[in-house]
Image 1 (tube, rainbow, N blue to C red):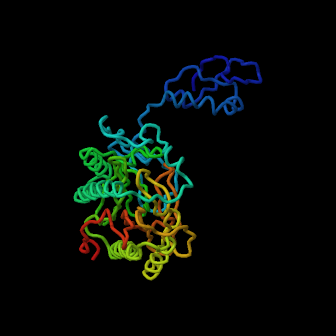
Image 2: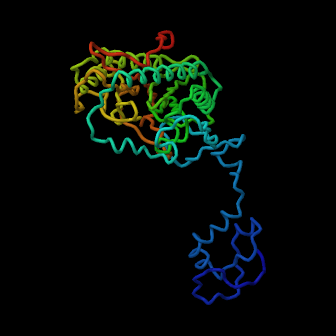
Image 3: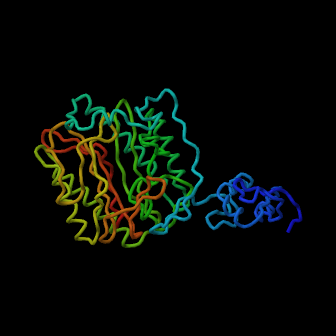
Length: 380
């Protein structure tokens, strides 16, 4: 205990700031001079303000003995959050990736606000012209190419941030803009959702592990139009539950696509998907749905994936939209969001899978604009 005698440092000292010898122990440890108080009441009364001195004097890098800090300097930024499963964020995030100036951008690229979506809210479903349909075929084909390249790198040991870099580079190589980048503030160029993450996972420094499953959701903006698709992949060898979950989710999407044609009701899509999930002891997420996509990243129609929904509208030739069921293992369809306000995970920590295609309603049926080669071996 120091024997120094200086006036009480409390801004509201009721005793007139007398000479004081009660030193703040944290300030003493940090080498901060002059932090003395006349008694415990003064010390406690100004604690919130006084503590700022400690924060300023403490090194910015977290202490290595912090349980949320790894030896390599990565850390979990939400240490007090009650996670539902074993998945954890691994920060710091890499810097925002650069998009060359010559690549056309959607309206939200700079400030994060999709103004055009807000202006078009409430308008009827768009019927695309033949020229616009061709542009959608092109952007969706490019999206399929990018997703297939990203999927070829899925293996134990790769980080989701490295997958983001691959998607970003493949996108700008095609003179396209990665649609997720800064959409409503999203910080990355692709969504990577692992295990219990249902959707909107932010790529970070977590390494994929043997037995994980990962959904890669690729969206891009090219020649004024967005394409959108995703698939879920096994990381190495996965257990039977994971295989079943992926197989059921893929089947649900495929069966839903089969009913799409002129005159079909959007609400009937969920009537196809949910019975398949329930028969396999799985649950369909209700919070998120499929959507219209063209010049706008997200717009009408809304496509719920569960039965007994109240979706409005009938399919007509020239309409383009996504179907993207998110299916959880078990009977709980609900979700929670991490403090990043993006990552959505199952409430019980069980895995979730998703598959998405962008579809065009034709005069006689449906065209899958994002179709790829089926890989049954991945789920068997």
